Image (tube, rainbow, N blue to C red; front, side, top):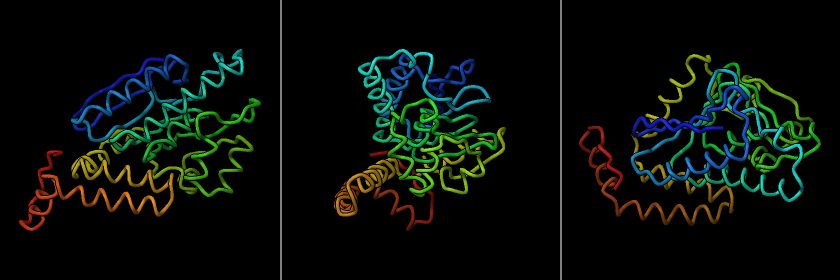
Length: 257
């Protein structure tokens, strides 16, 4: 798989580019994706990242089963570690990630979407964690993230049966934030990304990390971190610009410092 990065500052479009294989994720593709995520994380000109798949059939149809079928247990462990590293890099990236799911998001593709901050779907999107139908459990975080996104009982049903669900059901259970016609999906994702990017970039990044810490370490740890970053924000030019703009009834011009 190749991975394509299109910069539309302050937004980046990160594209899984293997449409002839429904953007299935192999080892080389995962390594390229991890490198791209880390590169964007270091780019302060990028405030929001949209993750999507090339073509109109798939976001990512999962891990490449042709590559997986003959793996030894040790090779399978390394493959799981790499997939989890990619998902973790998305969660730990300073920028919010919006998944624009334009078709199949199965197995590893669904796990990538789950690692993103916000999920938007086209009306043709299909989600599943079908690993049990292949005789394996999820390996890139599906068993952990899905029950944190949708009700645990619903997550268990999806994980234990491997069944597919369409965009409207995904919206109903809270797996996605919104569903749009296929031709509007990227436009809507860009609109949302612009709305986020218009806010103070330091504040958005600190807020993302506060949410993550609270979800992972509990309420007390999240509140303690929130207090610290709230105070830290008052050392920034963005805080002064934002509050002065409010008092002066104008739009703020945030510079990320």
